[in-house]
Image (cartoon, rainbow, N blue to C red):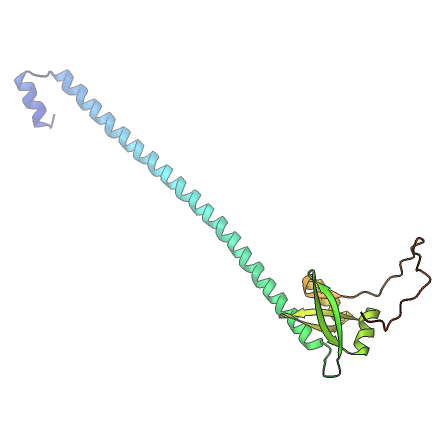
Length: 180
């Protein structure tokens, strides 16, 4: 009994030794319980910290994947721009024919000459988009661009003859020099 207050209560006869002993036992139980609670709360805190760290790691991995994908897309775009600028057919003042085509549900136009028009109609040339403008490229280059990104190319295939038995005008040829 190290507590002087308990000793005074005993001398005064207010409490007996059993009550003091029981109070000391209860006090020690509470201390042990508090220690256990602290260790449990420390364990819970550690678990929460680990869960937060794992969630952060998952978010970081997803963000890194997104950044890598963006970098890959940018590299592909630069490669396509280089392909188009290095292999586009030069157009000059002799390109007086307006060639209309559809891209992304809009009618676009490009100025070409007769030779380029024949190449487009035969499927030997394609039209590629670079920085908001359109350039003519050969079919091989157009295929390379299409492999990397289909949205950057408007590729013209040779017209396939549709042999439709119900077509009343199947016997009539459409002239190549017809412009609308």
